[in-house]
Image (cartoon, rainbow, N blue to C red; front, side, top):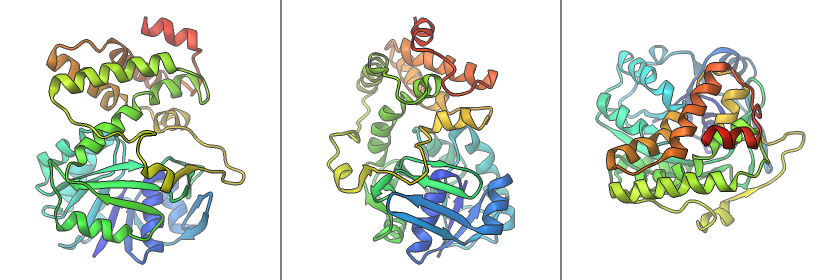
Length: 321
């Protein structure tokens, strides 16, 4: 059994390091400077309790892999990059192999199920960042983080158990869930302020806007009959596995949206975070004006190539109205 990690960025890199240290065979799919660095020097993975270089095969395209029937495929790219990734996998001959969506939001699984029959969700609770090509950092201890794993749309099967077993005893704590999408909807609540952090920078207090985003989301969930799990401070697993620590010489890079702006990615995933709440609200006739404003803001910042912290709190308040 091999585990194919499609998108060896921060989360994909953490997964690769945890699996390799756990004795699993990993093949990565990456691009650009990240691919070159991994091929030349391996991937250096750091956390408050971990600092190792891991070596593994890494390719630029799924077409370079001769897929086996028992391979497991982990999608670790941003949601806006999922459609071309799915097409590349299909072109490479993937069909029945299990596809696991280690991605924020709740749309990736639906996209994947249009193309492949064996789709699974993974909730990623793993604050991490890239600090240069071939350099990934996870900020929590004693583990990098936690994964909730389950079949889409519900239940769990042998593939979920296989993936969880691959991580057992590693730097990532796995949990098999019969309603993984409830977990992912809980994580979505935590991601709604990603865009405000990107616009304002880390450390700016935005509690009033964050509360408005959450209240709109909960109203939209209720109107659409959506169940969700509390993955915030009320989740007792956090104290056991996820406490923020210090990585010598490394500052926390911030959330995924801030990181996208910082590296000039040209796109952000806000359409699939706050945009999911706007969609649910429109479907149920529930107003979600603050989340809708964040969708517009994400598109504006990405289109203009804005740097993180390019707005003040007053700017943001005026934008939201």
